[in-house]
Image (cartoon, rainbow, N blue to C red; front, side, top):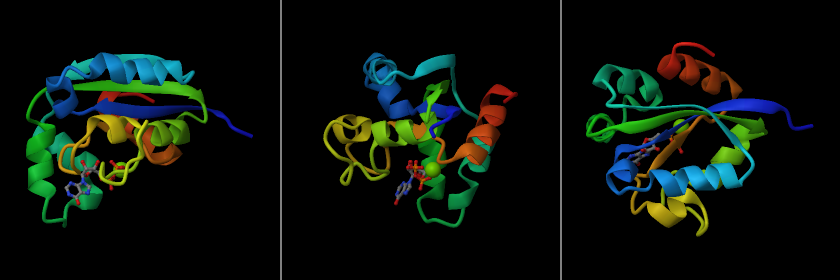
Amino acid sequence: MPQIEKTYIMIKPDAVRDRKIGEIITRIERSGLTIERLDMAVLEPDVVREHYAHLADKPFFENLVAFMTSGPVVKMVVSGLGAIGKMRTLMGATNPLDAAPGTIRGDFAVDVNSNVIHGSDGPDTAKIEIERFFGEA
Ligand code: IDP
Ligand code: MG
């Protein structure tokens, strides 16, 4: 049975620059999920390195850190039934070339270097990421 979950969502700097905050939040709310917390910030490189530590050995890692700190992001806690998986479905595939039309990445992102949105990939990472970016679970 689906549970009420919380997930950590981030609208990335490309989408903030392109003035897509409103359209993305509209899709989240329209899907029945609830925005519980919301804040904007320019991230420090060290927090991005920690957040993406699973990719530290990839050749694109430093570009990813530069991209994620290139302007403000919108940080959110989103809650609802099955919120973690539901957000991953709404977001679409990591690579926008593979993301289905109608998904946030499929509709707003051009390539994998700037793919518009982050969402936690499971309950454990959701808890860690909410603590990392909001200081409490
Ligand atoms: P996810 O964001 O869909 O969970 P992850 O594999 O956790 O995907 O990758 C985190 C982020 O790292 C991606 O959203 C994207 O910004 C970046 N990324 C992943 N793979 C590539 C790549 O091959 N080239 C450039 N950036 C990448
Ligand atoms: Mg991920």
